[in-house]
Image (tube, rainbow, N blue to C red):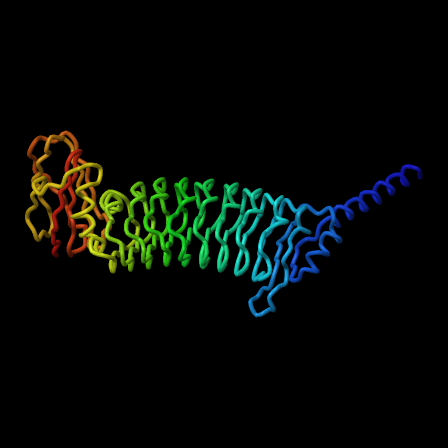
Length: 392
């Protein structure tokens, strides 16, 4: 009997202890008023981790706007395993109270908080397990508070921020595992903060910004989805993306009224990989077509090579089956040949080694679709381009 009583007492103590631990934090939070935020610290004074999500503010948009203006009652929170959403908090000027937060397992959505000026109090945050969206802020001037953020699992979307002038603070991001979207932020003139970005596993979209060039993207090599660069009125040059050699989807460069210098994508168009359709139009003179980019400004300066019209001779032209190239190796015994279709997609490539001074090469083009194509030949010192017509 004594042993049974002891076991029962232990079981009761375990149940009480478990109940106490569970009572330390709610499973999730949905706080819509300042009073509810103030009551949180009273109801859960020892709460440091929320297993679910946390919503602060008015969602959906048809609800009255929230009066939440002080987040300091949440100052004990270190971890949120679900999402964190701050939505339509018109009285909130800072994130004071989130200074201890290190981990968000789901999305971080900061949307339509009209008085919010900085994200300085997120300086402990290093991991976001979902999307990061910073959208619709009239007075947000900086994202520097994210300077310790090292990982975003999905998309990074920075859009509709009327006063944002810099992305400084995102320097620790080397990979965006989803898409990167930077849109409709009229005071953003550069991409300072993205210098260490190497890879985007989704799409890249930069549109309706005041960005002038892409200097800060000089380490970006791989975009696995689509690229869209549109409607950037002050964009003058693509300098900065010379390292980009792989685009898994479409490449769209359109309606950038001041864009005249596109030589930085010459290597991508001629030697890199683009998995979808290339659309280049409605920019300024020099960046209005694939041919204008590849043949004139880019080819002459890329990799310190010189353009020459005598590197290859092509016959017959038009061609139906076998393309003959008479090549002058010009002080080099190797040569790369690439065929691009009219959309700028590389459809065939060859690498030749140990060539004599003057050689004739043959390329079977029967697998290619009829129409206009570009032939680009290059060696260590020179570039040369020719246009051919493939017929049936």
